[in-house]
Length: 141
Image (tube, rainbow, N blue to C red; front, side, top):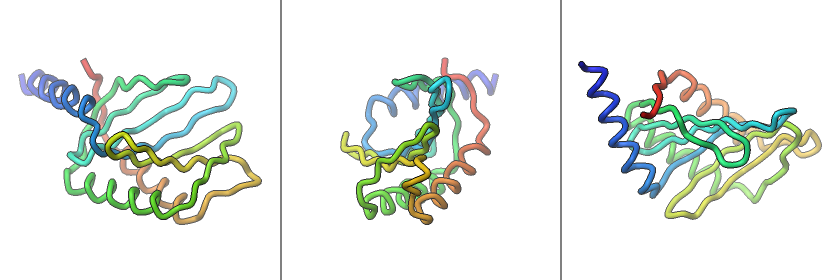
């Protein structure tokens, strides 16, 4: 019964959260032969969405981390992405980290071997990715 209430609460929260989208970060990677992307969307309230797709990503999984951890993660990414100069150098395989607030999106994309990303951004990307990969995701109903 707890599982049922968890799914219902996550669904309701995600429904309201996805429509609001005031502030969030996204990290992901993609490309290669299939061109599929995997994206993690981290909300400041601790809800994390995971999706895959070609072009537009469909978020089909949802998980949660502590609210304080999520707020700190969003703050750190916002600071790093805002401080970075525009950087858009994807390769066949690409990686990205972005910050969105009030429909204004700032994205750093890399993968081209001739244009490596700054070390501190890569380190932050790896830290965020490690945090979200540890999350137990469940399908969004």
